[in-house]
Amino acid sequence: MNDPAIYISGGTAVAAIVYAVKMTWKVRDLEKGIRDEFNAEIYNCQRDNAKLVRESSERAETLRHEFGETAAALRTKIHDVETWNRDTFVRKDSFEMVIGRLEKSLEKLGDKIEDRIEKLADRLQHKPD
Image (cartoon, rainbow, N blue to C red; front, side, top):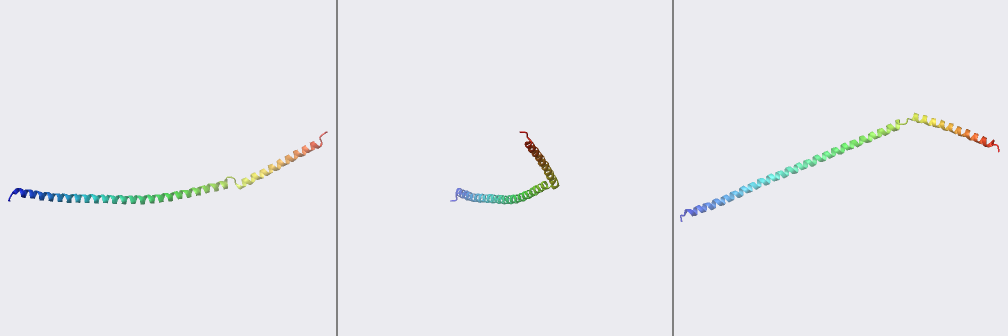
């Protein structure tokens, strides 16, 4: 019973089992490392995504504020232009002068019409039959 083949076969079987256990542990450690790295990458992506969302929200708020300021400046400028046009397009003195000239012109026109009507009436009254 001292056959060395049995011992060699038994040793080989034990070595194969030990090698299989060792390989299983190595694969498990490798899988754990890959999972840890993968989870770290997911965490980094989520953190970066949250940062981008926060930055885009801040930028959107900044743009909204800047647009509000632009709209307010446009409103103010339009009001200034309208006020300037109202005050300087036709000055009150010029307007009153034009109205005075129109009144005088209308009076002269009325006088001329009255004169012509009187002349026409005189002609009609002195018309030979």
